[in-house]
Image (cartoon, rainbow, N blue to C red):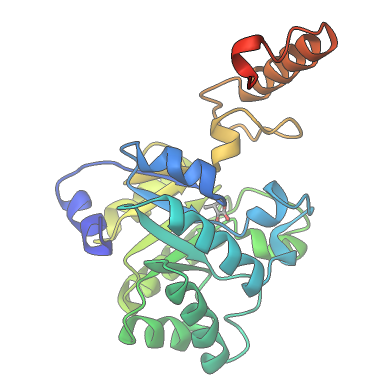
Length: 262
Ligand code: KIV
């Protein structure tokens, strides 16, 4: 899969599937699925490190997660998230950060928003770095929103998201994540663009869907947003397995003879 295949999928009306991934073990598992793309999301700050938002992510931490994922996912298209503010500190600093992720083996980077860093996106694309956009709820702006809130509900906000999507396409983004916006707005944007939209909490009208892997697997015990359908009761399965291990150890039933060396 290359970034141009995203475009082809839209032309052929083939839905795109993406998930987040932050580590080698899950990357190995994903490499044996038909998933189209993997996002090393800055949601790692929350999912893997327990922070309350993505604002704590750094380039160095993202590099480590990206390298681990790339080592595991032979043949998959990997997008690395640009962490909070690193693409707002000027074009050179932004390109330096993106360079770190491309050297780590990512095939593209994702940036939230567009206003104020149009030049950065354009320079990245011109320099051979495929750029994925991210509009609607931009988790890096959580302090401005005052929480993780659905965006694009008012007419003005909806028009602004449509405008930004058009700008991103003009700047050369190869796809746009649409997060937590009304389904009819996401559909309107999807129909207006030539590049694909990848939805998360943006309804079924997008060209593809992305979920945080831990949400998809039902591993997130703290909060399950309404769009994050768990396709597995992962938390229960993991806890049951560990309870069985604990019981077996305490009953002297583990390890068995065949699990021991002579
Ligand atoms: O970091 C992330 O997980 C994301 C997804 C929500 C798209 O940006």
